[in-house]
Length: 519
Image (cartoon, rainbow, N blue to C red; front, side):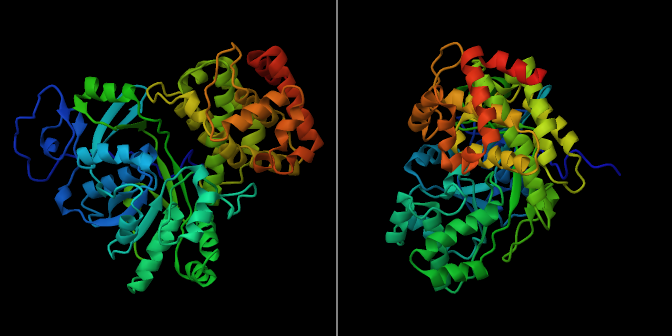
């Protein structure tokens, strides 16, 4: 049988509400319904309700990071299981580390922790209400969060805290010098980071004689379970090496690969939900129909039967994550910066630009896909074809600015490893060098037309200063050890980068892409 373009996909549609009907109150408006538990019996015809009685759910997972991706992914899979009468004791309890998360928590609390998920393809849009979250602890309340993790019903603690949230240095090792880590090491009973809170939660369980929960990373980073373990034990070793050893011996950190394109929510999405579906939701989630989750099956305290919702359990997730991080995430970077420099707003509009689309396909076929090891039952070329289709979806409304965000954290995870592998194998890196030059040119802060590019990276000021210096001396850009490590010493890469950056400044983005494609 030929390899599938992608394994274990799930569509997971919502079902009809089966709980007791809510009373018909005076709030009901036949034109527009405001999301809440009471509204579930009166949802508009085009919106599916949770297929279960939410009052029967009990907690099993505490999750840090209740943003759009988590709700479009993990929360959706759990909702699908609950609609099948499964995983009723695995409901989600939300948690947050930062005061800035309070606004999102307040919105969700006002609608009984319900979320509307709108799955969109070019010719269809389907809306369903997710009911798998039943509580959300007040953000930045370390005492309450630690206490909740120490309850015996919490068997998994999961995280979606973005690629930059793991306190890593240039070598992707734990960085003990970060001020927040220094604070938590000095104040273990009043932590400010997610890792300090998890450590305190594990200590509290140990004191109560409870076994440790499984820690499940759902972030888009290579070997995400191993990275989470390194950061957590690194913090523990700063104050209690014996406890760090205990964590290594007793706590499970399954690796996983997650995938679903999920843009940020804006007034555009809220208006579409209200005007096209008749539902008011303060924080809906719009996403593509495609979803994928590959996990290592390492859950000592049990887990939901996620395979019943389409999750693929494997012995080794590394081949799948390398495929995704390189073909999809690196592909996002490939289209992001030329589109940003050409003042293109949406991702699907970038894919409509013939030079950008051709740039993506050429660099994928000649430089990225050849650096992806074989993946079980998967045709990587067909996988890319599907990604090209996903990037072109006009319904998603994903923005180029979102793809350009946080390059200082994303480039060393998605682009630089491919460059290193290609150099080690003597393969071409011309397109990857051009991608790096495009990122540098973008960080200079103006597009080809002279329009101002607003700050779009936690390190924007430093990046912009360096990018402007690199206009005269391109090699300066490659001195960022946190991004490029020792690549600044590789003459071939330095020369290719410099050539492309000079061309971008002198001839512009479109002409530079034309030159690359002609070569």
